[in-house]
Length: 290
Length: 261
Image: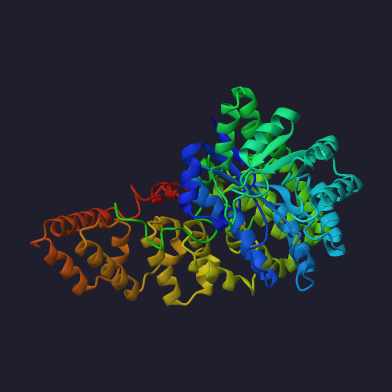
């Protein structure tokens, strides 16, 4: 069964993770732009990061027959930094115009400040301008209130609700998100947020429509095989293959296809182009000996 | 032959191979940019997706449709193009950067282009290195920089027929470096691409060539075999310079399929 990983910060992961994901069936993924685990100090750090998301990571993924896409945005946490926020927001539209950029994201709330309100609204407007879906992060603290405020801001922005996925849901938030018309994503972590067993129960209660599962792997404790493990858990709980496939493949494909830029070719076009990752290759200046 | 700066002919060449709707998209983008030059900043990244990347014909046979489309967008920017290309390159992916470098060959004089050419030559990306070694790029470089660009192509196995501006009138220093490369490869028992021989034989460096010859009777079997193979290719390449085996190969043939693991 092919798997789609709709939220993975692969720039924090090793090539072994790409290999392991490919081995369990991951054929395509989306890497949303987020923070680095420590604060950035200038707009230049975003430029290099965005360039890696549209270049280097695409190339690394293609080496393992995985089709890489990304979402670009100023993340909610760093929307609070007055040192570079305006410069980054000026930069974002250049990257939203690029191939395989399939969403604006991650946007949304971290601490629910006025600066976050402003960046969130401006980037939802960019999503409308560029005809792209939006990938919305919900806060870890005060999650239910933050999710409700998210739903309100999405509604006020005028973006079609089906163009929005609200991420990191739990039992308390998912129903309201689905009722708003948006898609509901669940990050399956080793210990926090949500696990496979709870997700299985939720699919039983809510059905598979507009439900998306991701591993949200980053630099912290996280597991790049969680989409696969969730598919196994759903199957073990008695869901038939159609339902499992819908959750781990068809739903994220349908959502990101709204961008018109999803390329489900397992990295073939990237390899065929001879592209060396936008400026470098792992060949270190010389092709390997035959 | 059509001049590469014949903009009408370039537009026709792009139109002939563009994706469905691509020619109309390009016409609209050019008009938008003439009215508001800053719009090149979001049109430029979209060219590959909208116009496609089929090979162009005529005077641009080493270009693809997106290269041609991007040159047209920069032409539409007018005199201000030199102020835009720095950021288009800096924020560009491989195809966009290649488009900037290709365009420099057909746009007017550029004060900022030389720095971009040098940046591209620092990468290990065959597409960028080849595009940087066009006529404009070579005109910006010192002889030493140009020679190192050629050496980089040889290391990356880029066919040298793709960089004619950089290999025209090779200096003795380039011939010596290439011959040294042959000595190094043969010593390691590895194969050498025949592309190097016409450039070596333009100014044959006796010391290095004698060393290769001596290795044909080396006690190390793979070294002797590599020396014999290299010299066999030398006589064939020199009598048949720039033809079969070299011509017809493109950068796209250099897909890094074999680098995993």
